[in-house]
Image: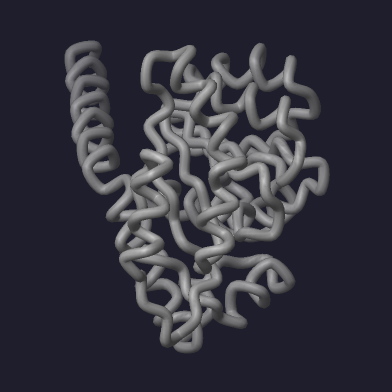
Length: 232
């Protein structure tokens, strides 16, 4: 499954989501590839330090995304693709290949309204692909006293975009994690709240998909074990 972390607006937390999602899936026992489609290369550098077992690669052009991303399906259970913050054609290519899109956005009415432009590329991809990729917006950099308002829900509804009920709080530890080459749940007690929050967000977004995939992985492993036993 190809999961795109997509928003043509920069500075909304895409890299934080991409790296933590790749690590979260890896720790659930899946084979994960992180595809870095952003010119800054932050996510591939970060994940190589944080979880070196995850293969990280760079895709530099829209053609590379279109041609190479589908080939990775045979090499991993999940491909997490960190999208660019401004390159519309790169974002379009990514969404034309993704099965699922996570759209981080800052928690303010101005940012939600700005999603109208950011989701234009998403809508084009969904029109071409008859509804794919399925997409969910996730509020990021949320203030500790923030409450999801009806106005924001209405704005998301107007864009026909699902909005996750759990957001990612503005915490210093998210800024500290890449500098330390790790993810928040490996940062001791100071990372405990952020770790619980990340798990809640990803479980809401992908819990059913992960559960289904886990069942398939278990069945595949059992099948391999039976074949080995028969060979013996």
